[in-house]
Image 1 (cartoon, helix red, strand yellow):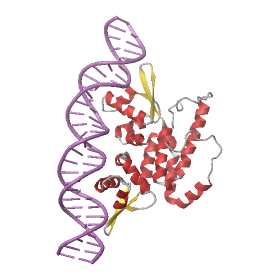
Image 2: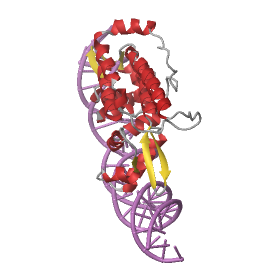
Image 3: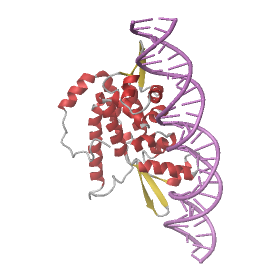
Image 4: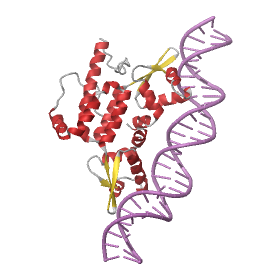
Length: 125
Length: 125
DNA sequence: CAGTTATTTAGCAAATTAGCTAAATAAGCA
DNA sequence: TGCTTATTTAGCTAATTTGCTAAATAACTG
């Protein structure tokens, strides 16, 4: 938990995670997208890996990184429950993600606002 | 966003947030629960406030702090969507929470304070 | 094998953070 | 007014983090 939040406290590391959202990438491919040296990126990747947010796999000459979204979701979820108990339904949703990825996407497309007052804030912060 | 994650990167600050989950507390009451000097706690509170995760209100001699759970949820949610799009159902839950809280606030005080701060009660459970 | 590419490790300086003590500010009370 | 409590600000040191360059390790290629 501590490691997860420390990992997320750095902007470059959050950007790396976002970059890995859709596909795995080699260390070099990641580094190419940042205005930073390869050793520095390597270090950030090590921090993310120590936090369990990504895993690496060496294939031949390259080291590929991909994210471990369950760990991210579980960590944030565990924290939110402790700090903000009203958000408890998040836990159920998180558990459901593992089982029903496809269904979840489908349901999301068809789910609209139930008719209550609109949320007070937008979806970003 | 940056400030939120930096604020959450510190264990004492996460503990403070957890402490404020159920009710507001004065700076002194918070400090009394930590093995740390009051000035240090005051500093942590300032960081949390700069991140929008808590708000303070001076009443007489005391300064009371309470959490702003919407901001926490919105920040984490915005990030998760960016990094882990598969977790989209979380967004629906977050919206539901917003509606719940809006309703609760409405029921709590018949007079709406359109320009004021977040709902007054720290009763998040 | 020698040469090239991909990645990490080592070691360093600059910047930031965490916690402390002492002092300042603000409010309540006799 | 003067005394006490509550909280924050100032100023300091130690520890941590960041990003760099240079060098080491690993794997592919001719």
